[in-house]
Length: 618
Image (cartoon, rainbow, N blue to C red; front, top):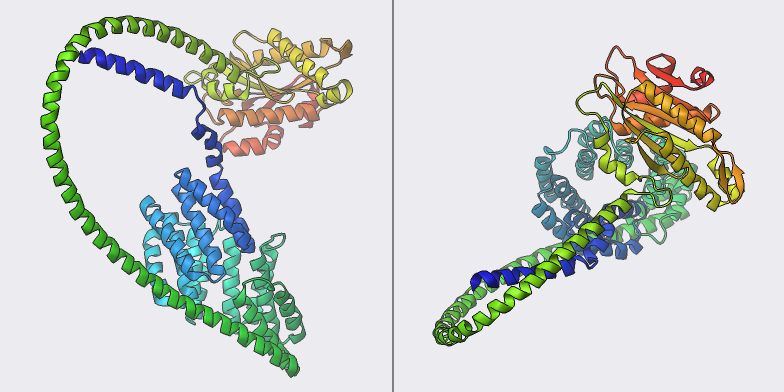
């Protein structure tokens, strides 16, 4: 009885899975949007750093929810860091601290050193703003332990140096900060944004040391790097630094104009620290030109702004202490709740055990009664089950056969261009290994790009329907001109890829000439109109060297594209091919592709064509 019961259940599960698999899955529909999460994160990150606009908060919260739904913890953590940065910029330090803590929990669970460093740097930013330098240094020690897992040269390492320098600067250790910055700036392969931040920090130190000439040089360098960018904060910092340079250099009028321009751009923003610096520069400049009325006005504004900053820091320090106290209270409450839950769980377990003992006795009595009726029912069920199983097996066989046919049809459709009947890109990316030589290089695979000349003018003159007809006829003509084992792929628009396996370079050239002549001489007729059609062809063998592989098939295709371009540039209705590579020393694949024309002139790449003038023009 158990054997037949298991069989019946298995059939039910099969049909349930079949029905579920035949319905479109909402998860599949969401795959595309989930794959776009890292790209959306980069867009929002650039927008936040450029504008610090609070209008970005709803979008960032949606991104964080989407990342959580997609189980993409890294994107979720980085979205939380961006929200924390905005909250920090607008003075909500308590909420920023909570968001950073949430991001830290995720990063700790992922054990991702880069993400952990990013979170700790965000917390360091908060600690420095609250003038809690001891706590900031403790976080930097954790960062240093994690940084050993980073590459020797990375943007994140440069950002670590930047924050070390800012801590030294905030504590008045200007020479130490300058030493850290010089080491960081000397590193290669640094992102433009981090490089500009390092230069800004170095310019601040130069100004505090009274070196306005060195600061001016740095400001000029920052301005050059910032050309064409839209980062409001960087542009504002350039004006703050330039105004201070003018003040120290004695150009008080220029300092006033620059500071006023910078101050104008801070209205309706929360760049309070930058406002205070500009107001102080204006007060000092007006005092130097003995305009004490304006100097007094800007000094009052500076005092008011500085007071607002001090009040914000003091309030946020209190809020941070309060948040820590609340956190400790919550942790104690959680500990008490866990103990209480453990006691209740023990009581529930004892009650369950008593109920189970009573239920077990009742079940034994019921089981004896049920067993008698089950034996009577079993004989009928077994006969009925055999008949049902036979019907189900027949249905399963029919469904399996139908599914196999449909799968073959779907596969053929996914590999075929709907207009021309040729294969599409999906086919070649899936099956390319079947057409490439792997062990013996006695014969090559020729990769040839074919492009219909002036196809746009055909569409413009005769209409798109005529152009579609030309494409169909063109593919039919190619199929008659090539070998049976050659493959035609519609590469895009009017461009086709011809793959010719197991063929010598010389035989390939003969076939391509035959294709070119047959296209040129064929009469393409669409809508009772004769259309003259020619084509340009470019080919390269794989492998390029007869005894080794120096270019992969995609790089070989790029070289074939160079040949196609040469054929078109040489007047079209022609073919050009690269057949040999003559080298005495190793050469990089990228160099072959980028410098193909130069290598042809140096006879290191052997080019052939049906027209001598094209070869001479290369």
